[in-house]
Length: 596
Image (cartoon, rainbow, N blue to C red; front, side, top):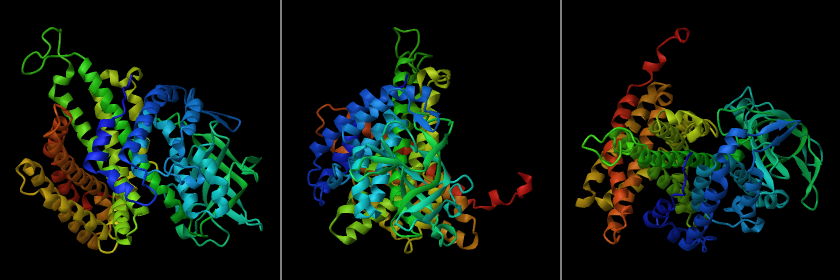
């Protein structure tokens, strides 16, 4: 069986010691109560819920899955009861406005909650995760009446939120969608069309579903500029807020998936369903991105969460499984063999996993802190810089978090050998579950194209230059310190390499239209590793300082060794990525189509 204990010590190290987030957050409007003590209490309660309620039903969710009969979806055993406990605990509305029953807490804290929930039960975590995105979209774009009608029910968890974008013929090219919305003359619209891959589109854990649907008005221009967004409830709300008459929306079937089987994925049919416009006509795609940006960061947390559970499980197995002897002599002479953790290959897999996970977590928390500053800070210039940093890091957190998440779950499965390949130990479920995270909410190739094709190009590289200023400030503050020299030098080299290859890519794309597309995925990994190096240097600086007064606490010594491993054995990957990127597009584009 897999193993999971919430990594609260590491979370608090990042939150309180490295980023000193409480000082920043409590200085922001509306977050005065977000003290370190309060955030710690929330993390403690979430850990109890995840370890004691959500994690024990994760395997049943995979083995039984969701079932579909006569338009009704039944969730796996224990899910309905666990969801009720989750909703009653206020977790669905952790960051939502108190005006609508939420707790008004920071996104920074919500990220850590999402990671723990995902580690314990990724399938279960997807249901409230989608509701949170729906809350954001309606809160940002809805009319006062729409907010009053939908937000209290979504915040309480009584109603489920879902986003309906994809159509079978369109995939990620939303400009091709065909779903129509025709005015009814009373302010409502009749929405007709079929959507696929709709997570949480129908299930038995809530009393109503609230669908955000992308559709075209009769006068809509072609392409993505002709898309509007509508709110379409499964049951039309009565004046008292309770579910009323059934709307003309229903699940036609559910998908039979590789993994994430406890989370239902539906084909949704809208047959003249009554809906209401959210936001401005023909501006639905921009409106949906209010939700999508939240969900992309959320999916990044899913990649990290599965890697964390895989790492903990592999480390526990490696300490227990005996096989072979250590190369430098028996480590357990009282036993027939040594535990496999003595072998360099096993150590390397575990060290790689931990070094990446801890960097990803720290970078994700920093990114969410930027989100909070962008939303709440009183100074416009500060808000803009924070928004730039969150925008730049969103494709990196999503794509790198899930690419490395899949890579780590696979490498941790390898630690189990043949036992990892069979169901008994649960590792193969993690591999299957995490794989979708590289695909949904925009494939990771799309994230990479967003980075190189859009984010780098905003106002002659304003976002990139802003991030470089953060990194260069860190380097300047630590240069010359003997205890940081072995870390600062490699970081400077990596930053110089990233700057050089970025300039090369921009120049190359002027002559080669395929240059950015050919480089994008490798460039995002190069950028991610460089960003990890920066956040590792910040963690190492903190750990070295704290170690002096640690009173025998081995946490900081461990942190330093893991960071050293990253700098010496992982960061050098950027050298090879630089060479791959500079190989250009011709090596992949020259072969004629017929030759494939």
